[in-house]
Length: 110
Image (cartoon, rainbow, N blue to C red; front, side):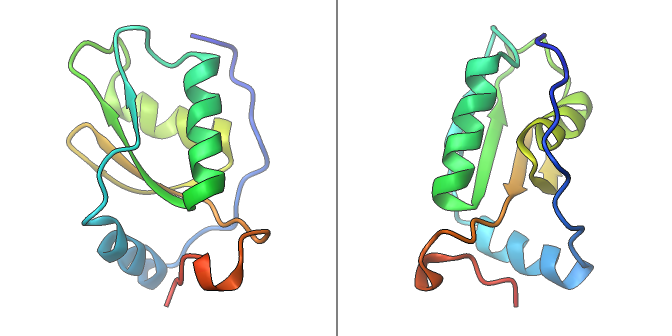
């Protein structure tokens, strides 16, 4: 696994904000999958890029990945500067606000 580079931690989310994000994330399909190569720098870059574009994403861990879900739920948010909203099975729901995104396209937390 690549070294544990970290980006600044985002502000913590309240329970109400997490609930709103879980509601929004329910219908999403995973945009990034992590397979047998595990958590490489290119996977982190892909997650970072998709977070910038969409703010709220799902990441799926395939059965072939050497990474366990709890360590993924710890490492990925630290490396991408995002919040872990939810971990269900091998699917992570991540959120990172993008203030440069047009206001009408930003994820609403309330």
